[in-house]
Image 1 (cartoon, one colour):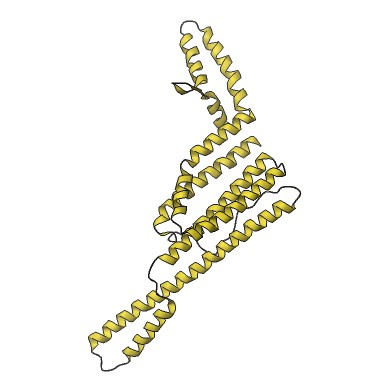
Image 2: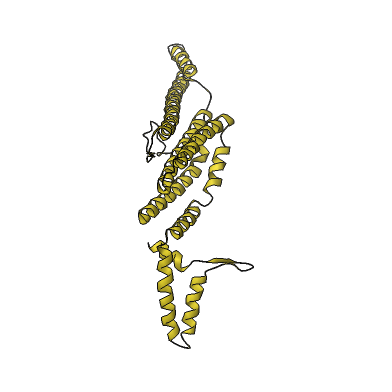
Length: 277
C-alpha cells in the first residue's frame, strides 16, 4: 500500500510547455509556505492531504495506473533488448517463435471473449510471457550449439582416432613421432567427448522446444474447451540447463540481463495483485 500512497502524493498532470507537474506535492508545499504567514494553512493543508492522498491510494483505477507505470519502468527497454536477441536468429528460428507467440495471443483472446476477470487475464499473460521467454532462450541455445565450434562429426573424429591408433602400433616410428601421435590422439579423444556432449545438448534443447510447443498447444485447447477460464501454470521442467550458463555464446550477458528484467516485472505483478486482493 505504501507504493500507492507515495504515488498519490506525487501524482502529476501534464501542463503545456511545462511538462508533467506533481500538483499534489506542489499544493502541499504551497500550504507549508503559507503556514509561515498564518499557521491555519498548515492545518488546512494537512486536512486536504489526509483526504486526497488516501482517497487516491485506495482507488482501484488509480492502483491499476500505478501498477502499469511501475511495470513499464521495471521492464524499461526490455522489448528492445528482446528484439535484438530475436534478430540474431535465422529466419526459420524466428518463424518458430512467431508461431508460438500467435498461439499465446489466441489464448488471451479466448479468455477475453469468455469475459474472464482482469486479474486472471493478467496472471495468464505473465505465465505465457514466461513460456515465450523460455522458448526464446532455447532457440538461442540451439543456434549457438549448432554454430559454435567446428563442423566435425563424431563419426569423422572416431575415424581419425582409429587411424592414429593403428599408426601408433608401428614399431618403426621414432620416439618423437610416437609422442606427437599420442598427444594428437589425446586431443582427438577430448574433441570427440566435446562433440558428443554438444550433440546431446542439442537433442535436449530440441526436446525442450517441442515440450514448450506442446504445453502451449494444450493451454490453447484447454482455454477453448473449458467453460470457466483457469489459471495457467508456466512452470516446466526442462532437460537442458538454461541456468548454468554457457549455452548462449555471445548473447550470454544479454540473456542474463533480460532474466533480471523479467524477474523484477513478475515480482511487481505479484506484489500488485496481492495488494489489490
